[in-house]
Image (cartoon, rainbow, N blue to C red):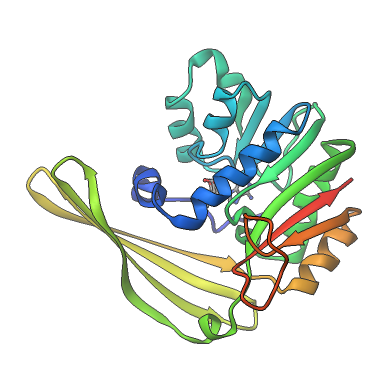
Length: 253
Ligand SMILES: C[S@@+](CC[C@H](N)C(=O)[O-])C[C@H]1O[C@@H](n2cnc3c(N)ncnc32)[C@H](O)[C@@H]1O
């Protein structure tokens, strides 16, 4: 069960600084924080990353747990937590995790499911999530809505972040995207360039992202036994329309 999704050091190191000001991510944080607050019981984040959603939830006294397959992401998240809370985090894969605990709510924010490339992987993860939910519990996750024009246009080394990662130290992130229509994947490459010890350093990280069409996502969650209660078109809970950038799926066990 191979995974092509192991973040490299630069991706983990600069994750927080790059994503801090991404507009739709702030909306996503608000949305998931509200859902976690109203869960009324234990919550699990699948693909918890560096704790963008997890840490604010814990600070608001949520009984939240997190898994992530990436050792580097888990290390970074743990480094931000009081050691007394480390038991809440474990390095596990969405496709075969086991926590011997059930949850009222499971969330998988910011494209985690787009890192599951095959239908087999997606169903395995949905199956583990289903089994970890209490009866009537919810699974909430998001996908980008594929824009047909963005799918056909390649992107070549476009600058998407230019700022400081520490006072006086510049970081740039460039990205490239090449389509793979047959496999419904966007092959993405990040190129980081940053100042360190008076030198310019670079690091490149390439990974595939699976995109889903609307009815495919609907069939998929139904196949895993979920009742799809709603798909919103953004994190403000607007209805899906032709201009929507997101699929935000609310699934009930
Ligand atoms: C874009 S990040 C999102 C992190 C966090 N949820 C957030 O909102 O900032 C995607 C995360 O999913 C994790 N991930 C990818 N595939 C996974 C899998 N099969 N099982 C568990 N985690 C996975 C990655 O390691 C990464 O930390």
